[in-house]
Figure 1: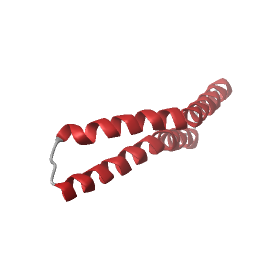
Figure 2: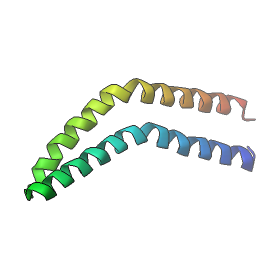
Figure 3: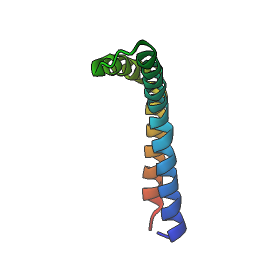
Length: 88
């Protein structure tokens, strides 16, 4: 196994992690920002007020983006298994 191949696998793994986690993280970030602005304007500083909408949004984003995330992980796993089969 060459150094370039290891770096290629590492690079592809990091990009796959970003592609899979980014939709859920962006949804959580946007909902958290909206709730924070709402709390700042109404001066309601309740911690659970931001937790429940973020939890619901993350759950819904997992439902919406779940097939994309699964197909991305399956294709990465197939690529890794093919790479393992070619290693001498």
